[in-house]
Structures are given as structure tokens and as C-alpha cells.
Amino acid sequence: MQNILRFFYRYRMGIALVTLQLFGIGMTAAQSQWHHSKFWSTRLSAQAAWIANVNGWKWYFNLADDMELLALENAELKSHAADSSQTGEEPTEWIPGRLVFGQTNLPHNHMLFNKGSLDGVKAGQGVISTQGVVGVVTRVSDHYARIMPIIDADSRISAASMASGHFGTVRWVGRNAQRATWEHVGIQAPLQIGDTVVSDGRSAIFPNNWPIGIIDKVMVDSSQMTQYAYIALLHDFSRLQPAYVVNMPQQDERQNLSQP
Amino acid sequence: MKRWDQWFAWSIAMLAFQFLVLDHLQVYGYLNPYIYVGIIISAPARWPVWAHVAVATVLGAFMDFHYLSGGLHLMACTLMAAMRPRLLGLVLPRAEEEDLAFGIADIGLGKWLTYALATIAVHHIWLFFWGSISLNFMMDWLYRALLSSLATGLALTSLAAFIPSQD
Figure 1 (cartoon, each protein chain N blue to C red):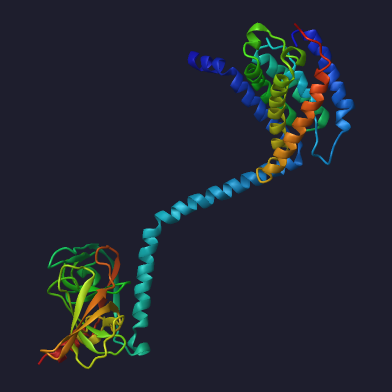
Figure 2: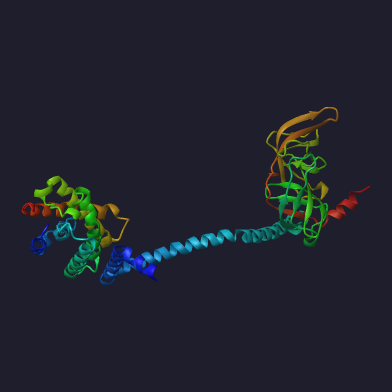
């Protein structure tokens, strides 16, 4: 108590001055209609600015939930877009999720996807991000799936030239996580630097026309009478990001029919 | 001033000059000299801060009563009164301790103008700011405050020139 009194005594002039200023403001606001309205309009503006600020933070913290909702909606839209009755493409189901682990520095890299068998993910299904083809599911647990990305030395992905439709196989030759080769392309294919290499439906793993990479060098393998090209991969494998597992219900049927 | 009776008499004169002459002088709202601030400016130097603030409270409340201005003059007067001893100390150190005289005849026109204009500016800037409460038109109220400060300083200096040396 004594300390409080001592505080007030010590700062008596400052406290008196502040009190007088507040009293003056109050008197001014009470007597002047202009000051009165100015006070309330200023307060209203401050409130609006504060609420906008708080809402901005709320939206920021809700982004993860919003993104998940958008991914679900996007998957549904993709499924509708690939509806065979509308487009002539094979029916495709999209399972949204997120890449939660990835490697780029080994000859045999793998990635983890945060959806598993309980979500309908099965081995052999393709994985696609918004940037392009990622890889193929190799194993699944209840809640996770292991993916063999394009940047695995054992990976082989069927791909075609978007410009001409000629097909070949994308294979990773190691070292650079942003570069792969596209091999066994017919010698007659008019490959051009800058052409986009996309997925094709031969393997029934990926839907047609999902981008894989851009041709930056074309070579001829004269011993096999084929061409091969170096491509710059479009998917950034060094970044964990949302992705989709592609479920093509007619995959098994096609594979059975393809077997000799 | 050193003597309170002299100060009181001059205060009455300044109020009369304010009410009878200066209140009728207005140049499109840009020139509002308030010579009554001289009452605080010329108060005896030995007075403690609380005495300045007490006088300023009464004076400011009276001016607000006269001008129907709520509490604007009260705010400006009390702020100026609280700062006055420090501002006087800047041009005349030990004025409070030794009760030094600080009229134009005692300290010279230069020091007097520095002290008076600085004190007047504190009052006018605060008064005009709260009068317009707007930072959007900052240059406008600042311009008005500084112009009126010069007018008040000129009028007050003219009046103070008649005050004889106190030493």
C-alpha cells in the first residue's frame, strides 16, 4: 500500500497532467458534436482494422484445413473430368494426400505418401502432383504408401511426346534429380527440343497427357535404330507437397488382357 | 516576472487585450493569436511546476468557458505549463533556483523570443491538433499552428517590451 502511495506521490505531476488531458478530451468530446462524431468514427475505423487483422491471422491458421478441403474437391472434380462417359478417357479416381518424405541423393530413392490401404491406395497405382508425374506406389500400409519416384534407377514410366504422340520409356540415369532420359523412341519420331513429354495410357497406371518433362537434348541410338532424349523433369522432387494417387479401376483388366 | 502582484496585473491586461482586441482578429481561420498564454509564460520563475499547472488549469478552463471549446484550451494550457520550467531552463539555466528575471530587458530579445516562441508553439500545436484531430491534414493544422504561434509571439513580444527590467 505504501509503495502504491509512494508511486502516486512520485509521479503526481505526470498523473495530474494526464488526468487533465483526459478530462479536456472528455469535455471537448461532450460539448462538440464534431469531436463526438470524430471519436466514434475513429473508433469504428480502429475496430474494423483490428477485426480485419484478427481475421487475417485466423484465415492464415485455417489454411491447412482449407487446403485439404480444396484437395478433396479438386480430386472429385478430376474424377468427374475423367469420366469416361464425358471424355472418352478411362474412369479415374483421385485420392488426395501429401508427400511426407522424399529422397533425391541416392541411386534408389523413395518417397512416402500419407494415405494408405484404408484410403483405397494399392501397390501399382500412379502418383501425380500438380506439377506432373511423381512415381508409382510400390508398397502400402494402412495409413501410408511407399512410392518409387521417377528418380529411382529401377523406375520405368511409359511416356509419349505431346506434340507427335510417339511413345517411349522414361528412365532415370542418376546424379541429377531434375533430369532423366526418355528412351526407345522410334527413329521416325520428329523430336524437338522444348517438346513436352507426357504420360501415356499404355501401362494403365497414369491417365494420358500428364506432364513429365521437357526435352532439352535429342540423341540417336544408331545401334538400335531408336532415339533417346534428355528431359528436364517438371516435378520438383526436393520439395514435399500435395499429390494424388491415381486409381484406374480398369487397370487390372487391361493388364490381364495384355499378358500373353 | 519576479513579483506575483505585477504578474497578476499584467495577466489582467493580457486577458483584456485578448478579449477586446485579438478575438476580433481573424484571417480566414489561419491567424488565431492567443496572447493569454503570456500569463503562464511570464509567471514568476521560482514557482514550482504544480503551481504553473494549477494556474493553467484555471486559465484553460476559463478560456474554454469563454470560447465554448470544451476542454481544448485546458489541455493546451496544462501541457504548456508543465513544460514551461524546462523551456525556461534551456535559455536561462538556474532561473528557477535563483528566481532570475527573464523579461526582454533582462535577457535580451534573442533569448526571450526563443523561450516565448517555443512555449507558445507547444500550446498552439497541441491546441490546433486537438481542434482538428486529423493527421490527414497534418500540414494544414501545423501550418495554422505555426502561423498563429508567430502572431502570438509578435503580439506578446510587443506587449512584453513595455515591461521594465526586474533586476
